[in-house]
Amino acid sequence: ATTTMLGSIAGQIAACGGGAVTTLMPIGADPHDYSPSSADVAAMVGAGLVITNGLGLEEGLTSALATAREDGAAVLDVGPALAPQPFAGSSHSLDPHVWLDVARMATAATLIGDELVKVTGDATYGACGRKVASNLTATDGEVAAILDGVPIGSRILVTDHDAFGYFSRAYGYTVAGVVIPGGSTLAQPSSQELAALSGTVRTAGVKAIFANTANPTALIEALAKESGQRVAVVQLYVGSLGPPGSGADTYSGMMLTNARRIADALLG
Image (tube, rainbow, N blue to C red; front, side, top):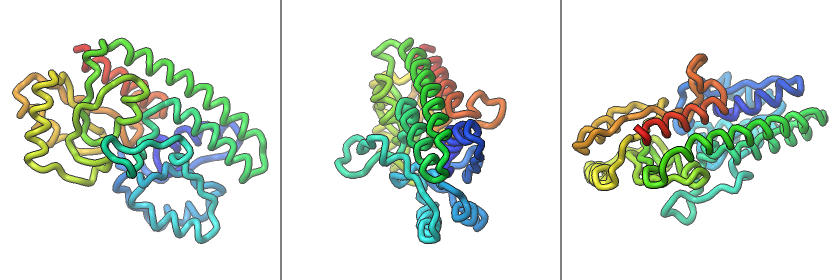
């Protein structure tokens, strides 16, 4: 699996069925700019199945994945099968951040299990995929319940980059602005964009700006200060799971931790 989120879900399915999963990206890596090592490429070529997010997320893995495919590796791009939607304001650029909607990842678990049945011939993986999907459906309900505790008028998100489109639609939130333009973390905002966002923070009564644990927070802290209001900077697990003991070291734990941090910040 490429990302830690997919590695967590696929790992549960594989363990249930007697297999094993290796995750290419380490904890804390940003999927947008991760570059593979030669060992990563060899691991993909030698794997029974390579599971990727797709939709342009793993920008640094593009050529390595192409090489793996040319060498005969089976590759499952999960994102395109999860009803992807364009970024807000775009008619053609699909948003890859599908994992921030837990219901979509429950569907992904079923897809991964079914694909493992195809490549191994072992029907156990299908049942395992459905079991993990059922657990994720329960997690989705827990996440929704936590987020429902925030009054509708306070469900406003300002985030470091445009990653919360699926999340906001799934759980009834509004993204009022993003610090880094576009859906990648690799761009840089202009001074005019930051000034406009600072104005949005003031006029919308934003209580918190949500940062990504995989990226530096200097820009976000500067924005919070420039707004002239008491605005908390809250770290979320966006592009990677957290380390052991963080409460976010599984995909379900990551999403529940994020939900609690968002609710606590917006209620605070």
